[in-house]
Length: 351
Image (cartoon, rainbow, N blue to C red; front, side, top):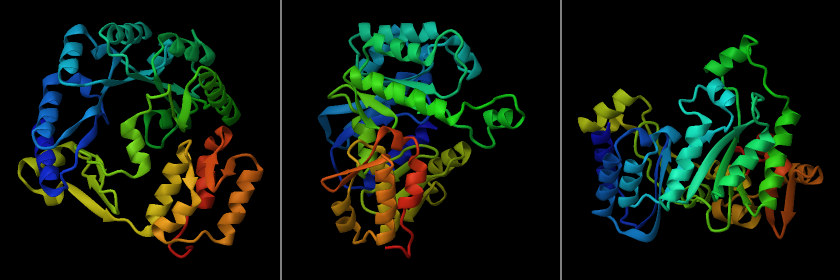
């Protein structure tokens, strides 16, 4: 797998413009389960071929149970300076229900061990909207997060997907999802508590203290070019070409190790309408929102009367806000963003 990823990286290096690297992100799985030296080889491969900016952000997704003194020093030596920790909950009952390998005590120890080593740029993942708390309430989960004084949090509402174990349990009546209004209240409580504590709610699921926004994820939302390396990874050239890697691990490894790039990935040419809809989707997820004039100028599209009417509907219901030609979601609007986007999306004939 790592050999194949290295060869894919070589392909990108030979087929792309030689721009400097400002962010590197190891995730989409849990890279902390492998030896840090493998991650270091990929960083070296990049640094030997492209300039890496002085203040590069290098993030590694980690499990709490993978954190110990030896690997911390290795991560630190190779320049990793940001850690995304999949804590999910500080309640052991919730962790057991989620089938997580770690316990709350391990998450506590992992956070403090990183901080003691001077690696304080930590983002914690938490999940709400499941209704499975036993030893802590959701409010106490937020208190626990704030007690660590870490500068970033990603908080996600639990979703029940089809063809998953949770989807099956829900169909069988073994799991009863929380009422929508209860989930909304947990989201709004999190928003109020964190913003009062100095955090910026800069994207639907992300909060950061000033200066600690994720540079990497922000690049996605702003349409900045990026490479995606590995099975299922996506990339974007910053203009209109999307690259999508094959998702099957065995097919991915075989394709790259045999040099059969034709079966390793697909590309898609996005139309102006598709690009505009992505701009709606990513822009309304962020606190910056959508610049309506830039929207029309960038893709040569015009917002018709029907979209303006629907926009006014959401503004009057306090789900959207419009100020100086910039459209943003309110916190309550973020919770119904799928419905908003359903109204705002253009079709190939609606432009």
